[in-house]
Image (tube, rainbow, N blue to C red; front, side, top):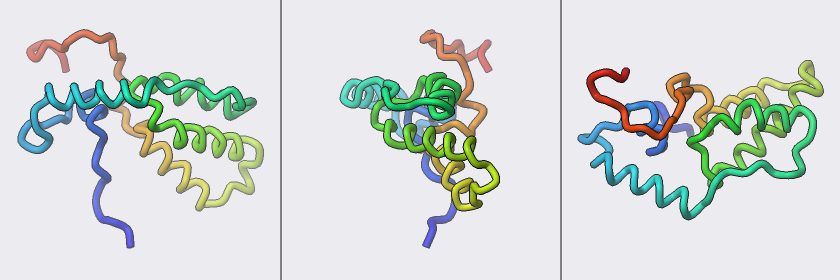
Length: 131
């Protein structure tokens, strides 16, 4: 049976969209260090060479701008791009189950939340002037 409620958000996404709460998630500096260690261990997400056509377009359009993804999400990103290619080739025969699978991949990659679409310039935010 499925679990109720929203899935827990990754620490990196909580830091990006500003929903990290010390009472719930612990110290923010510890969370930043954990995210940095994770990126160091897994490495940067890189595009696989075998992607072609609509899968490559999906990678460039959806995955490359997602700066919060690291190599631990590579299998999900590849599966999403290949599913996107399948959708582009035959949208009429793309079943509802496949649509649900694509939505689940997008959600897990953090692509469905518009708060993740901020530009990360690497600067610290000013608590009084940044929204």
